[in-house]
Structures are given as structure tokens and as C-alpha cells.
Length: 65
Ligand SMILES: [Zn+2]
Image 1 (cartoon, rainbow, N blue to C red):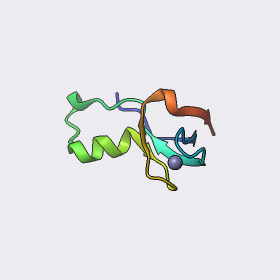
Image 2: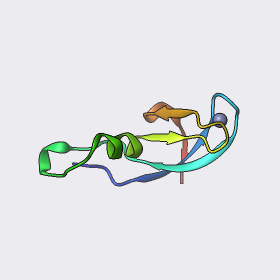
Image 3: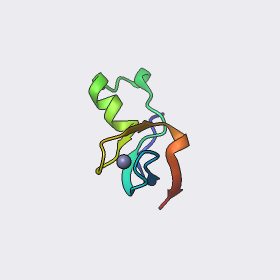
Image 4: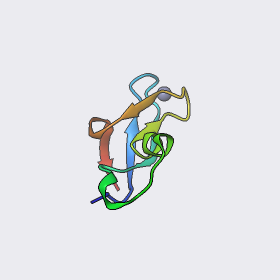
């Protein structure tokens, strides 16, 4: 089952900016949901608004609102 988006708080490892973004923990492509590679990339990553550094996955999460 595809996780709903979660709003997370992230600290950029590159410039130390703290920002919030939304991310999905998992996406299930077997239920007939159609995702482009770009949508999957966007849904499973966060991008720093300051330096554009991109991160993926659970390791980036420091808190969940
Ligand atoms: Zn940054």
C-alpha cells in the first residue's frame, strides 16, 4: 500500500538549513497506480530550498509533525 505523504522536518547536511517538505515512505506500483519516474523521484525525496541538495529516504527524517 502506498503511504500517504508525511510532512517532515529536514536538516540539510550540506548547508545546515532546516526546512519542511513532504515525503512518502513507500509507493506500491502493483495496485494499478501510475507514477512517472519523475513523480516517484519527487515523492520520495526532499530538496533543500537553499542549496538544492537532494536527499532520499528515511535517514533524512529528524521529526514528523
Ligand atoms: Zn542545503
